[in-house]
Length: 618
Ligand code: ARG
Image 1 (cartoon, rainbow, N blue to C red):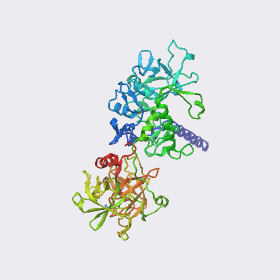
Image 2 (image 1 turned 60 degrees about the horizontal axis):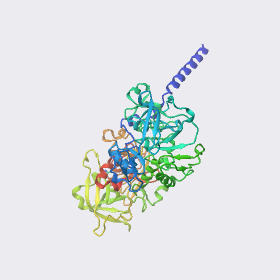
Image 3 (image 1 turned 120 degrees about the vertical axis):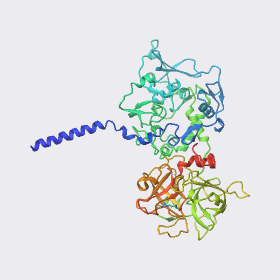
Image 4 (image 1 turned 90 degrees about the horizontal axis):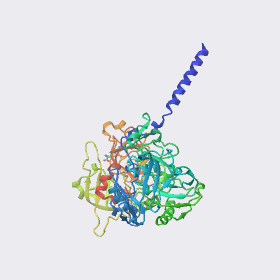
């Protein structure tokens, strides 16, 4: 009897084990953030990824820049419309506006210059071995299989007119009859994956033996039937891929939609804090790919990321002018020890170079080390220079609100702090610390204009955000704030996440309603799911909760309009929130509620001008 029971137990265990191992065949579901998928993010979603240098980010979408908005220097580029453009950026910006004009070659246009891609297999134009004719080569050539992947195949298919890219990049096709394997030369090609034509990828000729030729099946309606029905991932561009291909760092969809909503990444691809998987080769490659920057952190054992970028660029730029038979000895990787002939220019390097020429913004960097050194628990007194963006809004004799300097003459604050009609009464006190002993750095500005968010609702505190423009002194051309530094304005809601630690500061009251005379600050963490505390009073997109588990650190009456600042991985300060409201002060389960500034980036930039607050080309 006992024995049978033991046996049964084993059987049960065995069965449940079996069941578990069966279901563990599909853990891919867990890697994907379902809620995020409903946002339909693609390579053009600048909340998730950086835009190309010939684009800018408006309302969360990368849109075309006008050619004149490109950096000026570079070498000329020829387009398929027969026109030469002064720079690659200008050609791409023109193409972005009129997609029929694609990249043809680096350098001036020539009368004979032509590029073509073709496939030949039976009588379709959508599958077969890939052949290309490069601009300054006379004959069509094949592409080597070992340089070929879904990344290049997607580009080739788009070039052939299949907007959804490739279905498969690994297929073996029979060699056309008149060819013999041994006398077949092939080209290597490298793409980043978002090129609009294969001509934009870099072609090299290497003296390696024959390894097979690249073939492709482009994604068409008829091919869709071959996609497994049970295990599909639906790309935003309509293409269906298998779920195992999502969150693997590779842009299988072609519009990157399979890599933008990930909780984890497959293989050894790299997970950005913003939930994006990038190829492992992008880690420490000298170019920031994660919007949060961590892919270029901790790279010292290679080279300093910034140096790396700049060192590579002149070399690449040198190569760019040379159309062809230049021999370039590449790095020490053993696989590429043989000589490599670059047949087309490296436009990816040129893209990086253009990126480095875009205007840079200076914000969020303090010269004060001490705020980072001190690990704090609550309401500590600030020292001079700790919060160079913090200002006080003085209304008559009182200071009821704080504000945040964001550059130029502009102060960000809460809508409930100010009235348009009272503008003449306000004073902005910058670089100010203590009521009782005013410091010498203190600079006072009068107010020119108050702009309250047009949808501010005083009953619900929705859109509790306002801008104050300070008055220039008549002898000055700009607002001169010698002891203030602007905080950066966040452009994406994915820059910081729940549990990130941030700092709130202000002259507001203590818990016991005691008056405060000097600037105080405290460390709080961002809180997700805040509806569980405030139910329908909390608006996820427009508000951000922050606090501590025991509630001991919080903003309070008088802190309103002041900053909740978060530091990114490079210690750059972003104004993530504006102190708005809260149930009492410092009570557990009633965290402070802040206006979520990232949601208002476009509103702010419309009023203060893009160039004042936009960095990374956003
Ligand atoms: N509305 C308040 C003010 O005018 C700020 C309240 C913030 N409260 C909080 N518990 N975090 O100063």
